[in-house]
Amino acid sequence: MLDDRYDPVLTAAIAGQPRDLPPFTRAARGIRAAWRTLPEPDAPMIRRRIRIAASTPSLRGDVWRSTGNTERAIIDQLVADGATGDVARVAASSVLAALVAGLFMWADDERSTLADAIERALDVIEVTA
Image (cartoon, rainbow, N blue to C red; front, side, top):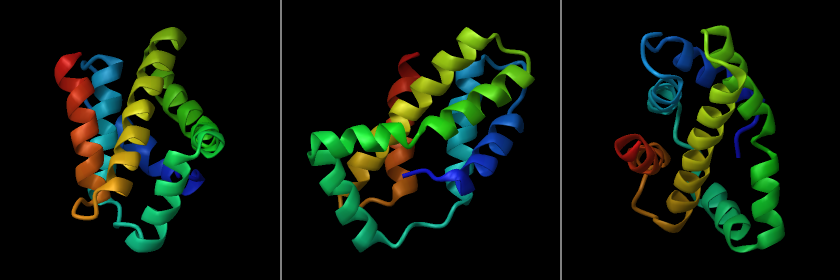
Protein backbone atom coordinates (compact mmCIF):
# COMPACT_ATOMS: atom_id res chain seq x y z
CA MET A 1 0.00 0.00 0.00
CA LEU A 2 2.28 2.75 1.23
CA ASP A 3 5.89 1.93 0.77
CA ASP A 4 8.76 4.05 2.01
CA ARG A 5 8.85 6.26 -1.08
CA TYR A 6 5.64 7.96 0.11
CA ASP A 7 6.78 8.55 3.68
CA PRO A 8 8.98 11.59 2.93
CA VAL A 9 6.14 13.20 0.94
CA LEU A 10 3.64 12.57 3.74
CA THR A 11 5.90 13.80 6.53
CA ALA A 12 6.94 16.89 4.57
CA ALA A 13 3.27 17.75 4.01
CA ILE A 14 2.54 17.25 7.72
CA ALA A 15 5.56 19.38 8.65
CA GLY A 16 4.24 22.09 6.32
CA GLN A 17 1.02 22.46 8.30
CA PRO A 18 0.72 25.30 10.83
CA ARG A 19 2.14 24.21 14.18
CA ASP A 20 -0.65 25.90 16.09
CA LEU A 21 -3.08 23.25 14.80
CA PRO A 22 -3.69 20.16 16.94
CA PRO A 23 -1.53 17.17 15.92
CA PHE A 24 -4.50 15.21 14.58
CA THR A 25 -5.55 18.10 12.34
CA ARG A 26 -1.96 18.62 11.16
CA ALA A 27 -1.68 14.94 10.27
CA ALA A 28 -5.05 14.78 8.47
CA ARG A 29 -4.44 17.97 6.52
CA GLY A 30 -0.88 16.94 5.73
CA ILE A 31 -2.08 13.60 4.33
CA ARG A 32 -4.63 15.47 2.20
CA ALA A 33 -2.01 17.85 0.89
CA ALA A 34 0.40 15.02 0.09
CA TRP A 35 -2.14 12.94 -1.85
CA ARG A 36 -3.10 15.96 -3.92
CA THR A 37 0.47 16.04 -5.26
CA LEU A 38 0.99 12.32 -5.88
CA PRO A 39 0.28 10.71 -9.24
CA GLU A 40 -2.68 8.35 -9.52
CA PRO A 41 -1.53 4.70 -9.43
CA ASP A 42 -1.85 2.33 -12.40
CA ALA A 43 -5.51 1.83 -11.57
CA PRO A 44 -6.65 -1.51 -13.05
CA MET A 45 -3.87 -3.70 -11.66
CA ILE A 46 -3.54 -1.91 -8.32
CA ARG A 47 -7.32 -1.74 -7.78
CA ARG A 48 -7.61 -5.46 -8.39
CA ARG A 49 -4.82 -6.25 -5.92
CA ILE A 50 -6.28 -3.96 -3.25
CA ARG A 51 -9.78 -5.38 -3.81
CA ILE A 52 -8.42 -8.89 -3.24
CA ALA A 53 -6.52 -7.76 -0.13
CA ALA A 54 -9.59 -5.97 1.25
CA SER A 55 -11.74 -9.09 0.91
CA THR A 56 -9.19 -11.57 2.27
CA PRO A 57 -8.75 -11.40 6.07
CA SER A 58 -5.13 -12.54 6.11
CA LEU A 59 -4.21 -10.05 3.38
CA ARG A 60 -6.11 -7.23 5.14
CA GLY A 61 -3.76 -7.79 8.04
CA ASP A 62 -0.79 -7.55 5.69
CA VAL A 63 -2.04 -4.17 4.46
CA TRP A 64 -2.16 -2.94 8.05
CA ARG A 65 1.29 -4.32 8.84
CA SER A 66 2.69 -2.52 5.81
CA THR A 67 1.73 0.84 7.33
CA GLY A 68 4.13 0.44 10.27
CA ASN A 69 6.95 2.51 8.76
CA THR A 70 4.50 5.20 7.69
CA GLU A 71 2.98 5.34 11.17
CA ARG A 72 6.44 5.69 12.72
CA ALA A 73 7.36 8.47 10.25
CA ILE A 74 4.17 10.42 11.07
CA ILE A 75 4.68 9.96 14.81
CA ASP A 76 8.28 11.12 14.56
CA GLN A 77 7.27 14.23 12.61
CA LEU A 78 4.50 15.16 15.05
CA VAL A 79 6.80 14.65 18.04
CA ALA A 80 9.53 16.71 16.35
CA ASP A 81 6.95 19.47 16.00
CA GLY A 82 6.05 19.39 19.69
CA ALA A 83 3.37 16.73 20.20
CA THR A 84 3.68 14.21 23.01
CA GLY A 85 4.33 10.62 22.00
CA ASP A 86 0.87 9.42 23.01
CA VAL A 87 -0.93 12.19 21.15
CA ALA A 88 1.25 11.66 18.07
CA ARG A 89 0.57 7.90 18.11
CA VAL A 90 -3.20 8.37 18.28
CA ALA A 91 -3.14 11.02 15.55
CA ALA A 92 -0.99 8.86 13.26
CA SER A 93 -3.11 5.76 13.84
CA SER A 94 -6.30 7.69 13.15
CA VAL A 95 -5.18 9.18 9.86
CA LEU A 96 -3.73 5.85 8.74
CA ALA A 97 -7.04 4.14 9.49
CA ALA A 98 -8.75 6.67 7.24
CA LEU A 99 -6.05 6.25 4.60
CA VAL A 100 -6.52 2.47 4.52
CA ALA A 101 -10.31 2.86 4.47
CA GLY A 102 -9.95 5.28 1.56
CA LEU A 103 -7.72 2.82 -0.24
CA PHE A 104 -10.31 0.06 0.17
CA MET A 105 -13.14 2.41 -0.94
CA TRP A 106 -11.13 3.33 -4.05
CA ALA A 107 -10.60 -0.33 -4.90
CA ASP A 108 -14.37 -0.88 -4.93
CA ASP A 109 -15.32 2.24 -6.92
CA GLU A 110 -14.02 2.27 -10.49
CA ARG A 111 -15.17 5.89 -10.95
CA SER A 112 -13.16 7.26 -8.03
CA THR A 113 -9.59 8.48 -7.99
CA LEU A 114 -7.44 7.41 -5.06
CA ALA A 115 -7.00 11.02 -3.97
CA ASP A 116 -10.79 11.53 -3.93
CA ALA A 117 -11.36 8.35 -1.93
CA ILE A 118 -8.74 9.38 0.62
CA GLU A 119 -10.28 12.86 0.85
CA ARG A 120 -13.73 11.33 1.52
CA ALA A 121 -12.30 9.05 4.21
CA LEU A 122 -10.46 11.90 5.89
CA ASP A 123 -13.64 14.02 5.75
CA VAL A 124 -15.33 11.52 8.04
CA ILE A 125 -12.74 11.70 10.79
CA GLU A 126 -11.75 15.33 10.42
CA VAL A 127 -15.30 16.70 10.39
CA THR A 128 -16.47 14.54 13.29
CA ALA A 129 -13.38 15.06 15.44
